[in-house]
Structures are given as C-alpha cells and as structure tokens.
Image (cartoon, rainbow, N blue to C red; front, side, top):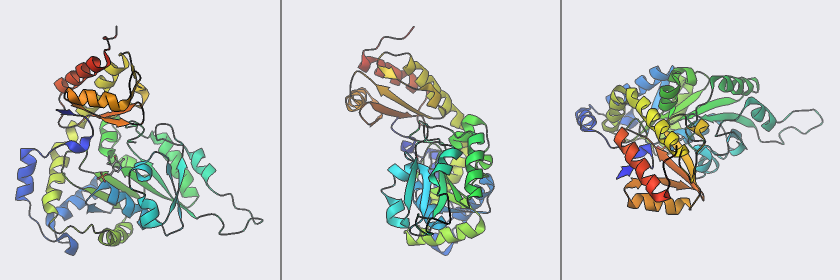
Length: 349
Ligand SMILES: *Cc1c(COP(=O)(O)O)cnc(C)c1O
C-alpha cells in the first residue's frame, strides 16, 4: 500500500527506535526528563525563542497557546479553514472560551487589511466593552487546508505589524513549519520571529511517532506549562518519545526537500490528466490537493485504495495526497499510474 493520506502515517525507522530505546529518561511532570529537556532546548534554539515545552500533540500545543494568550470572552483572529478552527474539536470554545473571527483567506493566507476589518474602531459615542476583546492573531504555516501553502514574508510582516499596532498577540501553528523552510529556503527562526508563540510537530513529515512543541518567551512558556498540566499533558518518561523527535531533527529534516519535489512532480502529472483539476500555484510543499471531476471523491479514493494507493477525500470532489518519508520516487510514479487507470485518463501531451 502506498499511503498518501497524511505524513502522520510515517513509522519510526530502526535507527530511530534504537535512539528511543537508548534515551535517558526521568519524570517530565517533575521537569526532570533529560531527553525532554534536551529537545525543548533544541527547539527553542532552532526557533530563536527563550523556551519551549514538549507536549503530546499539535492540537494540544495550539490549544495551550490559545489558553495562554487569552481569557474567556476574548476573540481570536484566524483563517476560516485553519486546523485550529476545523480540526481541533471545537477546543477554542470548550477550553479557552474564546470566539473566533474567521478570515476568508486565499488558500489559507489572509492579509493585514482582513485583520484590520475584523477589529472594532473605537469611538466615544459607542459603549465600551460591547465587542469581545480582540486578543490574538493566528497564522498556519504551511497551511494544510490551503494545500500546504507558505506565507510570504511580506504578508507576514504586514499582518504582524497590524497585530502589534493593535496590541494583539501572535501565534503560529507551524505543524509543518519545517516544510515551509525546506521549500522556501527561509529558516524556521525567520518565520518564527514575527510570533510570540510557535507550535511545531515532530509527528508529521519529520517522522517521529509522537509529539509537538510550543516555543516562546520564558514567561509565556512558564504559563503554558500550567495549562499543559491542566489538560493532562504531563507525560512522565516522555524522553523515549522525545528521543524520536531529536533523531528526526538530526536525520530527517534535511530530506524534506525530497517530499516537496515529489509533490511537485505528482501535481504536475495530475495537471496533465483529463478529469483532474489542480491549482499548481497552491502546491508549494509536501501536500497536493486536487479535484476529480468524473466521479465523487469517495468513489475515487475507494477505487484507488483497491489498487494500492491510499488517499483522503475532502468534500464532494476534493482529494488530498501527502508526500513523506515513506514515499519513494517510484511510489509517486506507481500512484500516478493507478490514478490514470481509475480515471480512465490518457496521458497528456
Ligand atoms: C496535524 C496538524 C495539527 C495537529 O497535530 P496533531 O498532533 O495531529 O494534534 C495542527 N495544525 C496543523 C496545521 C496540522 O496539520
């Protein structure tokens, strides 16, 4: 089976398992697991922040960040199709009590004018404390629903400037920040500079089995640790898992460009097939989102799966394919052959 559903399906390599087995461990809740501490220091250093906290998932990391920056009744600004909006079980409402103002970005990327438009314009004729307090702006980079799109630095600069001028905090969901950097050549810490907190995942394309980290200033991460404990994220001898993340940073980060190349090859071949619509402009990292026109996405992914290629449907005709550690160049060609077969599509000119 060629599994293109997600880059979370990557399995630990034998070398990673060995590193995990050898890891010195302690109790994370006592803040004394040496491997967790090493990972936290490494992430803080990589992202140019004072501190970082290792947590079990990217969802927990984002939700801790939201809770850290806000109080109930506050308002958060983010794209309507952000992971924090559509894939975190309503956590913003349930755990932080915040309302979300949803930006209608292009492929997940909105602009400073959109943020400005979402903010109240105070005037003495209007009563104070009527509107929810705008508190935070969140950016997802790369943007999953947008097709793995990367935020241009100019757009980030403008959004961040608007947020700062209005006294808002900034959080980046960088689940695939590693891919944004591998594809664009912009270092992670350059993207991170704009933000008070940055969340990164080790369990996606990096290929570690479990975990994410939230980074930021010492004060913010100290506060975040309180919510990590509150949400049940203290995970004892987590160094075994953290060792997988450290191994991934050392050995798998450099190969992410391969996934970007594979995604590009895959998308360009799809673009040449009848019955497929793909916006090549959104194919910027390791994710390819496309539409199949002759049948429903559900039928399409069922038939592909019967032939050994596993992909995710999204909506009536949308399909997602993600490149990762477990996908070789030959697998890309095989997958394309299966898709051609299923669609009855001839090769393009
Ligand atoms: C996967 C993902 C997350 C959450 O990570 P989990 O570890 O699956 O909870 C957050 N944001 C984005 C953009 C993601 O793709």
